Amino acid sequence: MDEQRHETTALLGPAHPLLSDKEHECLSSYVRKCDRRLMFYLCMGYATDSLNKMALSNAKIAGLTSDLNLRGTDINWALGAYYLGCFVFQLPSNLILKKVRPTYWLSGSIFCWSLVTILTAFVTSARQLIWCRFMFGAVQAGYLTGSIYYISFWYPRHMVRRRMGFFFASAGLGGICVGPLCSVLTSMDSKWLPWQRIFVVIGAISLLWSLLGPFVLADYPDTASFLSSDEQQLILKIMEHQNTVASTQQVRFVQVKMALLDFKVWLWTAIDFCANAATQVNGMFGPSIIESHGYSPQTAQALTALTNFMAFSGMASIAYTARILRGSSTAIALSNILTICGFLLALCSSNPSVHILALFVFSFASPQPAAHGPAWQMCNLQGNTKPAMAAAMASAFGGLGPLATAFVYRDEDRPQYTRGHLVCLLMTVACFVVTLVLRRVLAKENRRRDLDCGDLEGMSDEQVQDLADNHPHFRYRL
Image (tube, rainbow, N blue to C red; front, side):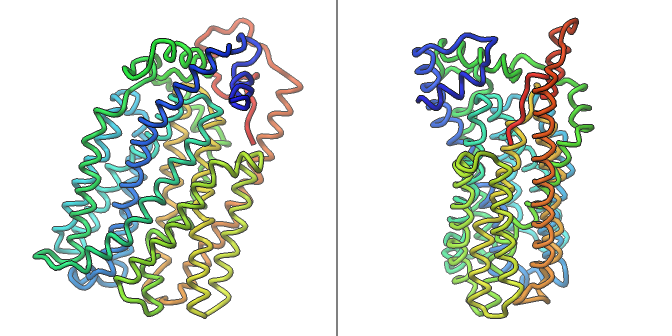
């Protein structure tokens, strides 16, 4: 409580009175309600997203390739089509969120991708499979960036990073479940083929979850029926100071332009691009890598629960590592170093046991930068539109990283996968370098603002709001 009080006092700054004991208790009550209701729904929704994304990699070793007579790079195109769909539809997704009720947008996204996954069970050719995965990416595009933006206007700035950690960790939770689930579905007898059962059951699980959205989620803090009037007034007081009261603000195209021209946003996007390339190796090719060392499809699917547990552990730790290491940039750099060690281990040995060990290492470390990056970005952006646009840019262009991964891990390179490991190693090195550059840029800007606080005299309230994180009193978190 004392630490939360100190951080909240720092957040409000000298222009506001210190929070009273009653207000601190009220804030704690507000956060507990949001965590148990909103964060739980968002996290479980992202877990089902992970189930749906990994369905294809598990279906691949359950007979999909032979039953559809897939040849050459057909499966790579199917894996990559998802990221193309995300890229095309991600940029406008958060701007649409400003016009559509978040409750319907987020739960509707889950509902739509569930239907696409179920329909994928009935494809009969490589072309149909590729189009289904493209559509899956298109309808899923709004959920990740929408959830990130949604969290940012429900929680005070200093609380966002920890919630982001739990949110991204939930993807690992879905990954832990998908392997054993697919192993059971592959072993069952029914009129449907094993890979068809995988798509139908996983799609049905997420579809049922989507139906709870309108009853669990609320659009904005000031319109939420589950909050007391005191809680609403307090969070509005904090959010008004942060300029993140989403319910009363409209899309500001001047802030859209600011996001597009801000080179810091592009550096965060570069971090996402490089980090995501390595992050998706386990999700897209983990079962194939394990199977290539002589394991049966059912055993390989079951063993992915262990690699996904490592990914879950890594992502869950980001809620604390950035705090312990006193900065997201340090946490990203450390996880990059661990990821580099994992890929070097895979490249420098031909021993199957060492390869499996390497898979465990980079499955644990590689997801962390992909989760730290958006959290670091969102706690360093202000304004009512710039954070949404920046999050969409990072997710869209950053999401193209796995597109490269989809084409460098080829079946003809089994079991070493030298080309794929080398490309991901180089991408991780690039992520490490860009992280250090961005940290230096932010620290330099903070020092400049400490020396020159700027002059806001003569500016209207609207002009001050449009300064966003360029406000002279704003300080970046490293």
